[in-house]
Length: 453
Image (cartoon, rainbow, N blue to C red; front, side, top):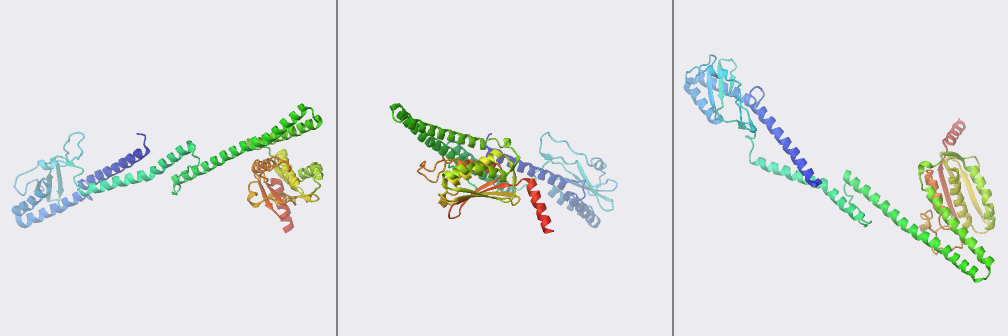
């Protein structure tokens, strides 16, 4: 029995059957319990003995006989009324055996679903002058003696409700199973229905999120492979051309210079791919050292001045106060450097690339702005994707392979920061947000307190 639906249905039916059986048994035992004065059966005995007493005192043995005949017809048992000495008031016989048989229960066959009844049930009147004895000569009464045909309809309704609830509970699981089978078979567009708000609906929603993530990763992987093959194909083709030129005996110096340039470009591409792998590697290995952003930016501007001069632009650094963060200094330096180099690459001649450091706790911000053409609005959300280039024809005039900002984005995210881009007309503004070091935050808070005082 491997079906969850069958297991659930049988479990509900068994639980319902146990509950009905338990209620039936307790109801039958409490109804017929002669020892309990609160039981309906015992209250009826009290009424009967008082009726028999009034009949005997008002009409003698004949009136008592008429009342007892009616009782015998209703109860299908032997009903006797005696005085305190055990004399049968209807026949005049002495019945001392009745009190001896009080409370004795007859044996019943094993596994017989019935109610063990006492041999003789006795009930005195309020004065204890009269005793009513009921001697049940029938076989043990069934526990289900009070069930009516209408109860079968109720049982059927319970079965239908159990079936409906089991179907309601297991049908989403079956649909989710089919969706998982489709997804595992290669249909990455398969999604589960999420119209329920219970735990099964949450499970379906979680699966859909996982499926979206897997589909995105697979698309990114295919795009990555395509981009890598495209990026490698161009320099390899040019390397082949340069080799052929060198073999043909033409301008060997130009051919070797071209070989060197293409080899350097391939080396840079491989280095950036390794950097991406390192950035997206094990986050637990990431350093958490204090990093002075103002010093990092000062060194970075100094190292980038030659590149900026070659583009006939200048770098302007604005850092009013020291700002520190926690993280990997080399990784942060590479991330900021990639953003700065990207700004230099797109800056027009005789313009400035502005780099500003702001240390408003609890966030440290590095803003890099160029005065170039900016980025189309539809591309702003994608410029941090690996190998994405706004110039879709992928010409090499602007340099780069579309990995610099992707590396920067990965590094900043590892430091629990954000990398944002916005067009400022003219130019592009890239903002790096990083959590400030705890010491810097406390220092800022102390300054704020002192200034308020």
